[in-house]
Amino acid sequence: MRRFFKVEALAKLQKILGSGKIKTQPEELFVYGYDATAGLKNQMPLAVVFPESTEEVVEIVKWANEYKIPLYPRGSGTNLSGGTVPTAKGVVVELNRLNKILEIDLDNLTATVEPGVIINDLNEAVKPYGLIYPPDPGTVTTATMGGSVAECSGGLRGLKYGVTKHYIMGVEAVIGTGELLKFGGKTVKNVTGYDLPALMVGSEGTLGIITKIIVKLIPAPVAKKSFLAVFNSIDDAGNAIAEIIKNRVIPATLEIMDQTTIRTVEKFKNIGLPVDAQAILLVETDGYPEQVEMEAKIIRQVLEKNRGEVSEAKNDEEREKLWEARRAALPALAQVSPTTVLEDATVPRSQVPAMLKRLKEISEKYNLTIGTFGHAGDGNLHPTILTDETNREEWQRVEKAVEEIFKAALELGGTLSGEHGIGMAKNRFLLWEMGEAGVNLLKRLKLAFDPNNILNPGKMA
Image 1 (cartoon, rainbow, N blue to C red):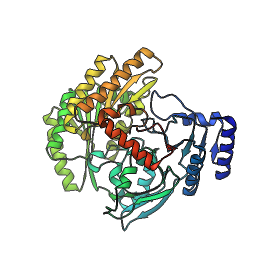
Image 2 (image 1 turned 180 degrees about the vertical axis):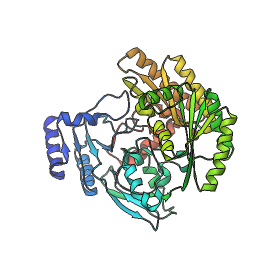
Image 3 (image 1 turned 30 degrees about the vertical axis):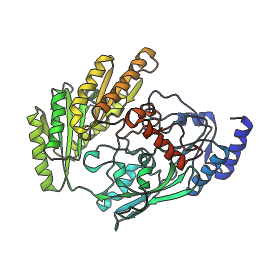
Image 4 (image 1 turned 90 degrees about the horizontal axis):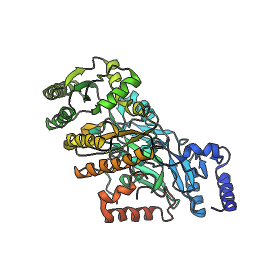
């Protein structure tokens, strides 16, 4: 971009927003050139803007169309697919100042929030009313609602309660033309036109910048039981996962950690995990007391039948310690090597044992350390490669291993992503899953919402 043109454009943007809402100094911009995704080169933006109202977002998008400057919507930057990394010189639109919980509607069991609201803050706000917003990604204390909707994040409770897309009733967004549109609302039933709220969920900032979200709330469960099951064989752990579901029990949470992850978390947290185990399962059932007791009995029987050594959390303190261990998996693994490549291979849950076997084979084939953990009950595994991207020879092996991980997932009837999105990290694999016609359809949809390719170009397709 010619310098005088850039100066003119940024001067006009400064005038639109006023003071304190734009950053242009290199030392301020550097951190916005990457997110939590490993292996992506930093691409500093021209500027970062901090709108504080929907009206300002509208004006920013109109400005971007006038000067044909790309915009990159961003929340807390915790996504793992390069979804907020600039792909060309453009402007990052940081939405964390739009952080109000606008309404908690107890009659309709909904909440209306701005995109910068932290997910955990929403749950704390509805907790006194006996309600919850179930989606809970691992970064629940830092991730924003807008980013969660844009990525369709999942989390530990996805098995029983579903993921973000199951709780979004309405969305207000500024599409790529600068038009402000409202999709959906508070009605439980709505089949007027296409399901546009669903289209916005998981759109990764490529179709519109989300400015308001209406979410469904549900009653919080009144009873819970949590179990830790220790296995000397990862095959036994995988078989136990499949058998729990076959017994018509859907736990609230059913998580797995392999030995590499167990040992790393224990060293990081010193919680008392069994470091000699090949795998552990963390299982929680919730609901009404009678239901919980019945499901807990079946779960224990299945775990023990598959040679699991089972212990039950006796109180809330022990329960929280179990889930603290699971949530520490990624932070702990990230301490081991300079680069942590966290993938999102997802298969039908009946194929979890087969996928675990394939991951072990890939690890051995490429001589890489892979720690696997994740939401085993819904087939969403997180094989995490511990490496150093500055070691070019090893990094080439990592790239080949990643390709094989996704090929394995697709061969087993799975998908490229269960909750992390496509972004720029996986878009080269889209053809494998969707085919040429499917990818072209994505591009045509993008063009309808964003004819000048202003919003998050280079992502998704």
